[in-house]
Image 1: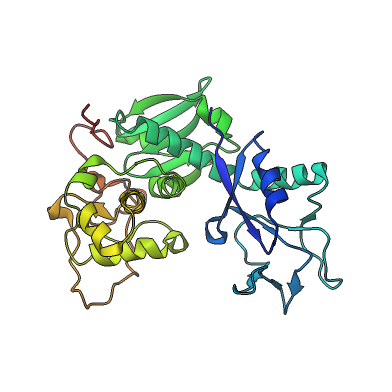
Image 2 (image 1 turned 60 degrees about the vertical axis):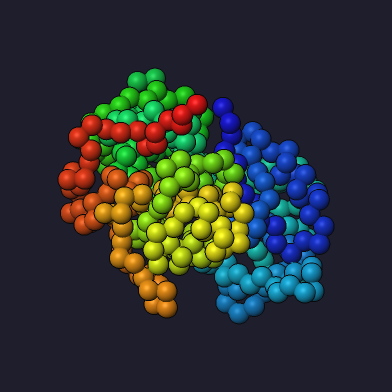
Length: 338
């Protein structure tokens, strides 16, 4: 089983080699890699240079004098965070700190992070399995069972539920059983998320080509803003969204207009595809925006896994849409011809 990879942001360190080596040797529960601050699942901050500010704010200077310092509100930060020892300011007591030279403390802090990120790891495990099986998924919903116990349910219309305390290892062993749309009802105690959320997160971590071939080779149309948190949408996504919303596009035309590499464009488009933003059917396209018209980003839309399964009207709470479901379930992506 491939172990999910979590991303660690390193903030304020002039020499990251030791910290990178510590992360590289961790593979018991999860694997870790370094990433940019905005993409990180967790943060290690340089405690020696940390400067407390008013309230819960803390400033971490950059080792590069040409770059700005990082300022964080420790009460509002949305990911696991720890400071390295020693702490250079006697007036600052971080909520969590560890000595990177002590193996047991490194193991403890990573274990704590991995516990907090368990749901993310489970999401990525299912997303990887869906990606691997995407040519064969033809049922309207699926039940995943481990030793006869139901551990997860997902629907091609986007709803997903996980049993409490499910681990990536358990999920990787699950047996899959296709079900009709009625089988997508989620038990009340299951953790809930959406296909858009888990697949967007997975796509933006992987360089594999996950854009369906019909989008890569044909013309695509804009539908709506992606059904994911706004903080997940990068500037590169917004650049594509701005172009797509003015009229039909191809991968080639987007490469020409953005100056991005084709691989990058396809990765960004794959995220937008799973976010429910694209279609190859002009009848399902959203209204085009004039080139000089301001792009609207305040629409509220239902989540989806793909355009062909989504109604243009949000369903009533507790009532899944049925009017746009195909009579015969179709795979998420047609197999590529050899």
